[in-house]
Amino acid sequence: MSYNQITVSIRNNTAINATFVADYYSAGTTWISFDGTQTISTKILYAKAKGLLGYFGWQIAQDDNWVLSQAASRAWGA
Image (cartoon, rainbow, N blue to C red; front, side, top):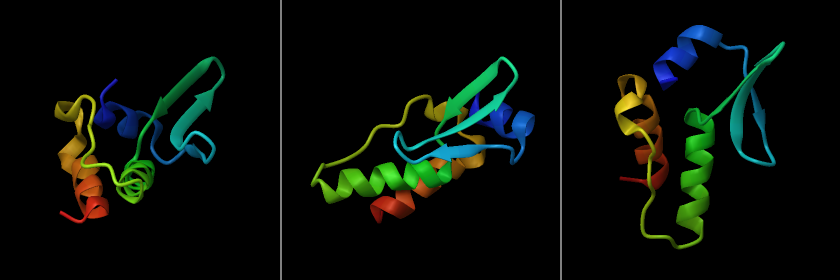
C-alpha cells in the first residue's frame, strides 16, 4: 500500500511503537506498519545525532503530497 492509501484507509486510528519507532494499525486480522511524519523525523534525528551523512527513503514515489519527504528534510535541517 502507498502512504496515501494507508492514510485514507485508516485515518487517525494508528499508534506508535516507541521501541521500534514505527506507526502501526491493527484491526482484527489486519496489521499495517509504516513510517509517518513523526517516526520519519525521529529516525532522521537519530541518524543525524550519530553523525551519519544522509538518509534513505524507500518508495519515495508513494509519498502523499511529499509530507514524509518534507518531514525528513525539516528534521535533517536542509
